[in-house]
Length: 341
Image 1 (cartoon, rainbow, N blue to C red):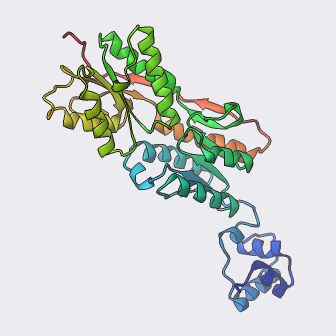
Image 2 (spheres, rainbow, N blue to C red; image 1 turned 120 degrees about the horizontal axis):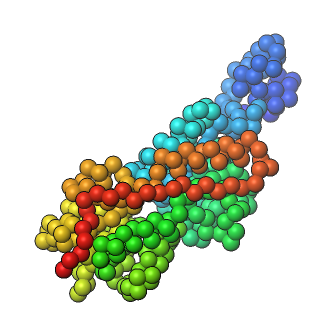
Image 3 (cartoon, helix red, strand yellow; image 1 turned 60 degrees about the vertical axis):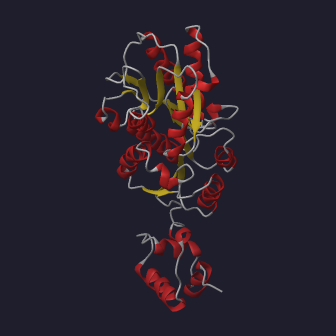
C-alpha cells in the first residue's frame, strides 16, 4: 500500500494540513516543524500527488482548457491557438498555468473533465466550444465548479452560465446581407458540426437574411462537416454539384482557403464566378489570393474576456454570472463582386 499524507502526519506527529503546508513551502510553519515533517517524508519515501501539493491553499493555480474532441485536429484550426493566446496573456498576469485536454472523442473529453473536477487538478475550467445538449455544461453546473463557456450555452436559462460570445446570429445575417446587396440570390453556407451552437446561430442568421430578401432557403445549399480537411472539401463539392449551384459561399476561413485551391479545378474564378465570405478573419484570409472578405470576431479578445470572467468567479464565489458579447466587424477584401450574370 502506498504511503499517504496521513502516514506522514502521524510519523511527524502533526496535522495533515501542516504536512501540506510544508509541501507548499509555507512560511507559517516553523523551521523545526518543517524539518520534522521533511524527515518523515524521507523516512517513509512519500511522494505527494498533484492534489496533495495544493492542499494548503486549496488552489492549484491552474486553469483547465477543454478542447473539442480530436484536439490534435483542433490545433490545426487557427482559432484555438489564438484564443488560447488571449487566455494565457491574462492567466500569466496572475501566475496561473494552463491544463489542456487531449481527448479524441466527446466521451473521452467528458471523462477527462470529470477527472479535472474530482481530482482537483484545476481551480476552474474554460470550455472552448459549445454544443447542443452538452453534458459538460450540465455537469459543471451540478458540481458548482467555476467555469466559463466560450459560446452561447444551450441551456434553459443562459443567464445561469458565465460565458463569452459573439452575436453569431448577427454574423450569419451580416455575411448573407452583404452578398444580397451584391445581387447574389443563390448563396451557399458551409459550417462545422451541425450540433455546434455557433453553427446553429450562424445558420439562423443566414436564414433570417434570406427571408428578409424573400429568397428561398435551399437545403442543398447548406452543408455541415466534421473533418476539417476532407469533410469541408466534400461539403463544398456537394453544394456546387446541384443543377443551379450557388454564386456565393459563406464558410470559415480555413474552408474558404480550401475552396480557393479547388475552384480552379472546377473552372471557376473568384470573384467573377463565385464570391466568398469567411468567418473569423484569420491572417490566412488577408494573405490568400485573392484576399478574402471576412468577419473579424476578435478571437484574441474572446480569450482575454473569458479569463477575466473566470478570475471574477475565483475572487468572489458569490458573484452572479456575467455574459460578455465581443463585437464583430466585416472586413471587405477582393473575394466578392456584384453578380451580373
